[in-house]
Length: 273
Image 1 (tube, rainbow, N blue to C red):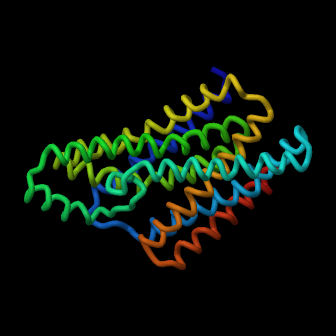
Image 2: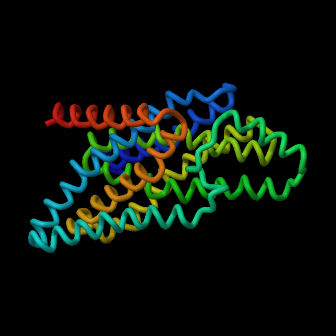
Image 3: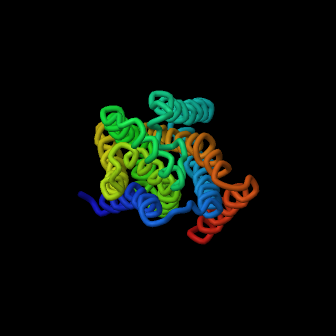
């Protein structure tokens, strides 16, 4: 395994296992810091949107235009970009909202969940909910893992930015996974470990995706992958991060985070030139 691939795998693992931070928040606190999560999710969206349009999509268009000609290169870039958005949208559509880890929950919701658990005693149903949640995380993290892994493999500095953005995004996801698992088992420790380990699906998905793509990895395919990754990240930002940021806190706070993320990303890219 080359140093570059190992570096990309470590970054993806870091991003995935950040669900553990959300698990720890749910395990050790009684209240959700909504302002912190709102600003952080906005910041994460800002980083991902800026990187997608300014770096990944631009790079894909330049490379594909050089290989295929300007008109066809632009056409293929646009098709791959919207194809990435379609993939992310289909994954969201396939996962029911109840088990969807991107349907945001708060630490406070555990109290209501526990009372429902005592009232109904429907252990089979609760166990199924926990299983479906774990499956939902695996499905959702697959394109995120590919996005982090591919970007880190091709451009290490961009990979770091994306990994940090995905890591921030995974904190509330960790809470969202913790709550239904706690609902299913009534056991906080078990819910913590399930939630923490759910992030493993991200590097596993990244490696699986990379191995599937590797035999076909021509410069043209790499350009398409970059454009598709940009589409995936823009979709995640618009469909999940910004709505969740506004749900957790004030509208303006999430926008301040969004702009801050873009400014930080722009500054870091300029300094690295």
